[in-house]
Length: 150
Image 1 (cartoon, rainbow, N blue to C red):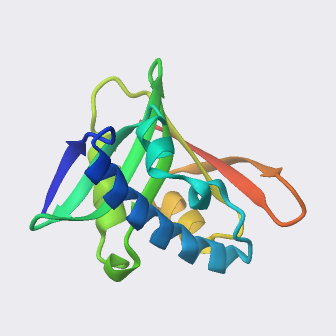
Image 2: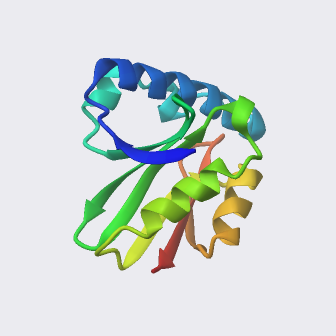
């Protein structure tokens, strides 16, 4: 098991990340009953140009999950936390979140998820995040915004 920074600009890595992302977010779409979510519309090119920092979780040499974020001063904004469905319930998401939370110069971490995505909401609450607000995006989708002081 290894967690390491990955270069999303590398096309092969971006393709692998996209495949995991699509599989992971299809599960979320099923949970929330809405499949028009932005991560399902990503392409290799949009990932390569997203400007996020990515860290990957590897078992042997296989990428099984990834987390990405942007930094704004000392605030880490998590954009994606994805695990391949074949690897669910193995602690990979927790390990990725714990790893990036330990990076230097972070005062606060923010993240959002679909309000109806109970597993994700529970996950973030379990990791010390507090719900700040809820925002209705459209008739089918509402997002919950969480934050955590480091």
